[in-house]
Length: 427
Image (cartoon, rainbow, N blue to C red; front, top):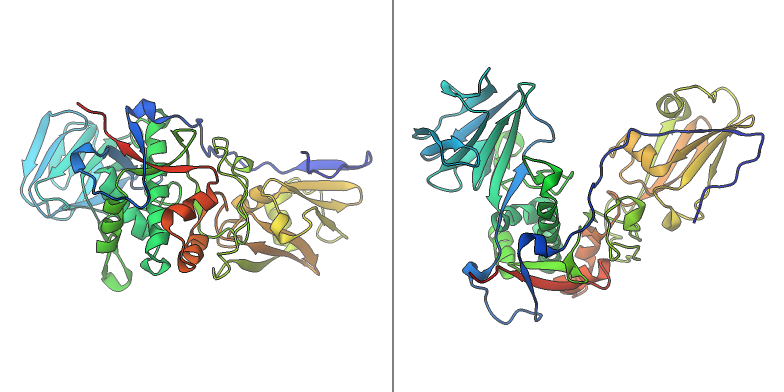
């Protein structure tokens, strides 16, 4: 349905187009690409899961959004350095003191150690034991020298170890065990979906921040030089309790999008993400009202707003401007809906999602807002925190407090889905 208001013939319409970002490139695929079987889970689980029958693949996590000119590296036990994705030995060393890593003309240098390879992998005898930029990680660290001389650093880690940190990184223990169980299953499904899209990037499967999902490692730096835990005993218990469990629809995993708070109603997934599966749909949510950003309001001067969006200066902040917002209420806003600014028959057309992307999450925590003019200011009245698609973390907290279990919480936000267990194929 076209929600854009019809424009009179005399109006000239200027549409602002933000630089497009690749949200997700590929459509959902089944687990067959990973060579897996699904076994329907009896809830709650009545038996422990044997580690050797559970699928626990390596995943590759990019520790920064973009490659770096240098990074710091330290180990707490002996290190073996090989060429990445091979067993070719490059070096062995005892504990590695804090060292700067930079690119050289033909490879990588770690402190005083010159390595004539553009792709290296570091493994420690005692795991966890590798520090990268003051974060402690499990598994292995891969460093790729890019053509421009920058370094891409990747943590290669087992899925279930990764999830122990994601659970704590994404959701505090105060949200309750069942909410965190739901978070764990959603995060595992998301990671496996991204793993099935491996052709998207040759070096990694996920980012270590909200571009994918938060992953702080085992320890990370806090304020005042403190070392904070990135995983906990409870997060590891939850990972073990749910080991292998994923969300499926029509016997396929799908991209389990989630955000901090939806503000009362989640967003239809395909309004923002091209690969959103059918269950990632609009759901009313009465459980996130305690979120700090359930409702919010921010102001920006009209002059500054026009500087950001009216590069061609088709409107003037000196003259009278009319603002037309088609949303009937804050619960009915859609990220791709248009907002019109009109002056003397000239119309500037903007989408909420583009406005939020341009102004940033600090000013506009979500793309779910209404706009109005008050004097010389633009006023944004919004709801929620994040894109609002799929699983609502604050809503999961509210549901857990009302007594719902984690799997029921998931099925609230992904209607028509099943929670199943992945089992490795028999050898």
